[in-house]
Image (tube, rainbow, N blue to C red; front, top):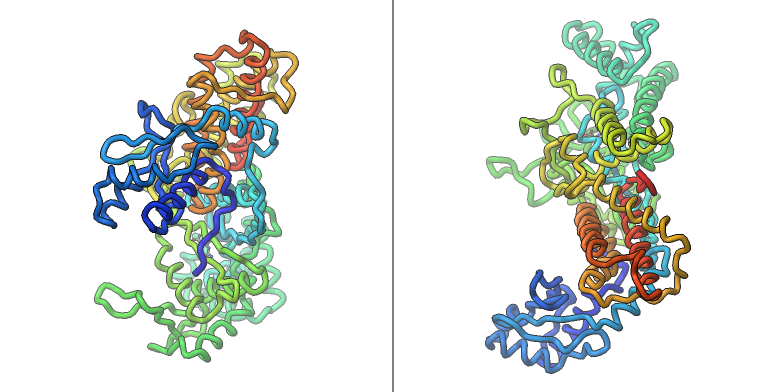
Length: 588
Ligand code: ARG
């Protein structure tokens, strides 16, 4: 399979890595990759901006002492245009300090750029993002919340980088449970006079389920309904549509509250693939990839075994002739590659579905469905959301954690923070800001967590004014706006940036790293890198703000430069939060 090519090669680390690659070729005849040059920001107190430990790795490889290797590399390194002469330290680290004039030139360009230096991709990639995907007539749970938030951030980041994201909401709107739901709807209708909250749908589902288990006649009629639904019986389809529409209204409510970009036209649910399922099975059988076991049609993709080491089947048609979740996912891969022309398909789905998706990917590959463009399939897995007792945060009777309640609580708490800090806000303004802060906090806490790990949902922690939270970033950004407002006239965009002070330099280096971070997010499909970066940038700004007077700065070029640095910081924070789907109000 192809790998995802980086879109921007504009940042300093990549630039330095390129020079190291050339030096290694010239000095040692070794061919390194850019990653192989291992350029990292130098730690604090290192008296350098970047460091490479490439010599240590190469030393082993070619059997020479690391400091020798470092010396040989440094002799051949051509970096004078951007860095001071490289220094060797410790066991053979190569240290780079970026030249002040180079930094200032680069920063001046970035400060004048509305995209803060992030280039548009030279070749637009079509990236299908499979996310959110709640199930009809079941309550959306926190797993769907994570998928929705992460997926939305990826969609926004892809679009900003100049790619074409294609959101696909793979809603669970098909399959055997619908027989019983439709039959129940047919026999009883909705509970009269009740508003149909999502919890009513849930209760309706529970009631139909118990009826199905207890009443053989009902169970039989429900099975017949599945057949009627799949055959397109008009009355059955009409009831099914009612059920789906009702659920979709609730999904839309949650999406609106969350402020995510997902729209009705992105819903391409399981039902969409109904008339493609037979072809999927046929084609796999024809290619000799599927075989019948115990009456079920199965694929055995190599490399998957159950506990006793026996090959694990991916069932694509059950004994009763019904198709499965897997058949649908295979049909979806085929559709997305052939009809949506996807270069890459990312599945923002919880970790428990890892094996399912890996088997789908392997089967699609075997079947030759990844096409000429060798579409890249990736599982963007995420961990669970835990409550304060480190138990799964679930929407079960007893635990009763509703998505709406979680979000509501965060917004209420955000409103309280605003009331204590800015008591003079007009009501409507305060409510608007409370939503930006509260919803932002929920999203940020989710995105800032290591994607694959579980995290504890804590409204207290996510709304902390200090630390790596969106609230901290939003206040930092609002503070910059208030400084800019007090400045009166703002400097011309072509103002030269000066980085004479260490805090200016540190902030400048952070600002220049933004494009590389956006790129890293798209490589790894991991927005938490952007969170880490934005936090570090806000911290660098606050150090700058404490040590470098802005409004009081003399002479004019210094004041202008500092104002422009502040403005660029705000732009990076606003753009960055925007990529995460979080508002950055100008005042709070
Ligand atoms: N509806 C599924 C669930 O709630 C998630 C679907 C994920 N996407 C997919 N293509 N399988 O677990």
